[in-house]
Amino acid sequence: MPALVLLGAQWGDEGKGKATDLLGGSVDYVVRYQGGNNAGHTVVVGDQKYALHLLPSGILSPGCTPVIGNGVVVDPSVLLSELSGLQERGVDTSKLLVSGNAHLITPYHATLDKTTERFLGKRRIGTTGRGIGPSYADKINRVGIRVQDLFDESILLQKIEAALDFKNQVLAKLYNRRAISPQQVAEELLGYAEQIRGYVADTTLILNDAIDEGKVVLFEGGQGTLLDVDHGTYPFVTSSNPTAGGACTGAGVGPTKISRVIGILKAYTTRVGAGPFPTELFDDDGEALRRIGGEFGVTTGRNRRCGWFDAVIARYATRVNGLTDFFLTKLDVLTGWEQIPVCVAYEIEGERTTELPYNQSDFHHAKPVYEYLPGWSEDITKAKTFGDLPRNAQAYVKALEEMSGAPISAIGVGPGRDETIEINSFL
Image (cartoon, rainbow, N blue to C red):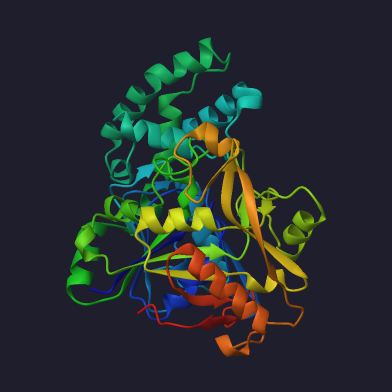
């Protein structure tokens, strides 16, 4: 059963788009199973760079069918804008499938997201303000709007009215904001209906049939393990499950159909937004990682916080996802350092631990315990095999593999599509 899950093993931004795109030529379906347009993938094809926010990376691979699963929250305006941008650049988007059960991000979700975040002040979580959290909240509260609702005008208006009954009271009485008209929201959403209709399908049925027929299906997580709402650094997390279990619920396939789970690891660590980050750097090394690695959010443009590789987090990701392989990205960024620190444990109130603390307060106060590995100065971007890497770069990869608990099966040595060393095939 050639069904694979590919996900971030840190806080996101590990280079999932490059990994998905690398596999895209051999994959029949690429499925986004959670998140919304708060995630971003950068894919470099030749001399062309593509920034994808909502669409699966497989949309850039001819012959591959990209799928937006039921676990994704969809902003229809963003979806259509992203499709239009790709079409203008000559990309065929006609194969895209969108689950009719995916929930919509409406204008009032974005309004609530931004308003609430401002109200929190210094206690803010660091959301993107795109309405993702409020849309998921409505889904759980059973007042959400789904893609299929676009095609029944009377039901759509009823659902919007039900959703806004309480929200308008909150906006007006708590935040001193003007109430939102259900009719205006309905009119805006209905304006997208015919443009989206041709993409909508029963994706759960299609994907299960595809797996049963022996086709290769790749499930693509939108953020990283440490941003998972259940298993991440709560409350500084996203509103869905980018961990491997989320692929089953977010795409409608059973866990027995998943054959491989691939974690994407950056050769150092980054995160965007607020929350604890034990190996974060505030010195010249941090600035160098940000500059050399181009560490700016694809979706938000925000500077990413940068730090050294954290093996404690990598081991945790292996455990909660059941990882079978790692794809190590951006190894080339570390070229030039004489020594490279790697966090092998934490010190918490004088005690050393090699496991991620389950207690939020302990994790917040965790101090990294470093081991120092020798660096390299040679250019590695032309390396085609593991043996082409400098000896110290090979030793660094092997050390990370041993610390992380799963084999490193591919290594990114540059941003380009062909700048990857494949050690073991994922298929």
